[in-house]
Image (cartoon, rainbow, N blue to C red; front, side, top):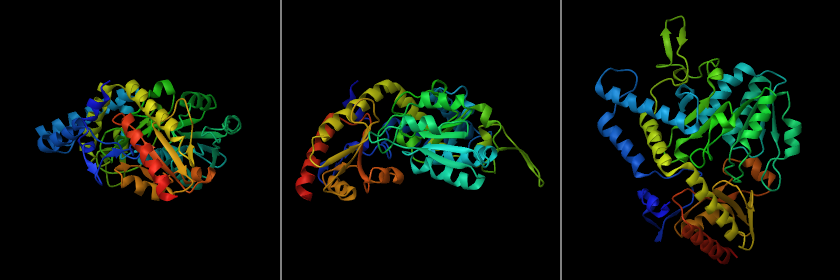
Length: 405
């Protein structure tokens, strides 16, 4: 792959920040957008801007065709059995809350257990806390070991017949740990538990097939895979979606309405009340097309090469503590703590040298507490990053040591 040529598809990367070439290492928070996605958004607003599903005129027909074509692309992208199993949301957070407030409220009772892990993003923790309070269910978590992996003994003891829902992250946004999703889903299924997989850091970075993994629900966000912000997907097995009540009420999700009551459309329309983010959906479709031309296997290999190289180089910096796996398979990020600089100060120092990173708890406060750090600095990569940029990062980190000590 000619990664340098592919990098040129991203106009935002060709600029200077504080007098230095931009090194963007914050893709775990939000990826950059290629010209193909930007052009798709421009085309929609310049040529096809109209509401979908609700009119017979030409602009609406074209917008609807593009909107529903993106649904089919999303289904194919994650290996769903049908495009009707694809629900458009604002992102992972809304998808998880949708499941909690529909399937969860409908199925959980006192005595049931919701199982999560100690490495979850707040969006895959807080909704379950609220659901447990609402239903009387008990929330339990699988601890994280010092190497950033899940405790296998705790999995054996906690994943039992009491568990009705097992919600866990595919790739940790704070550790880079890749959890064994297929194995965990199979174990949960054997016990009759429903599974929800948080694919925020995996979908768009590696091949993900929901049928092969065996999860019941999957969520992912477009803005972490070259699509616009504010658009995401909830995948759900149709057998579950058909039994779930609506969450939001309004236009488009109804079959009939009287003053006394309403009937509802089947999935996915049942869960897509109101005017959707049409441009966002179309942009997501364009992003999927773009990623598929590169190939998810190629992207995963490139990401892995970058992250392993970064761990190798950064581990030689005095006073550094890298969280998560130190070698082998890992997500495309490195989170670390320097004993002589607070993450916020380090991120500001890096920014003065043109490097964009993120510092803080990364919406994983329980995980930071478990590792006894106030937060970490996170360098996250995507296929448009280069070895040269990692070398630049290492240079700046060495300079930071001299600056802060």
